[in-house]
Image (tube, rainbow, N blue to C red; front, side, top):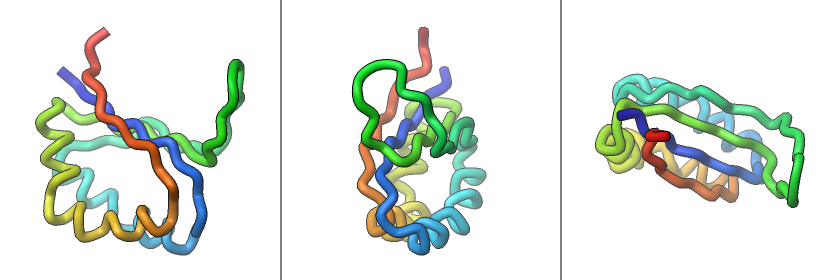
Length: 96
């Protein structure tokens, strides 16, 4: 069953974020992750939306998503995202 990582971000440093973006795709591919949303253009219908960017990544399973997040390869590049953004990050099962 698919699983999704959802990242809600406030971008603080675009240069650092560009370093992260240059490296993250290869690691995602290795763990079968696919970015399905990566967008800064949202329309708030209710409430407040303090985020700059929304990212949704699909994985084949919860286990595969955790393997990606905990992998040495990802942990080597996460530093760029942590310096570039303030992020709320969740992992959710894809069942309806």
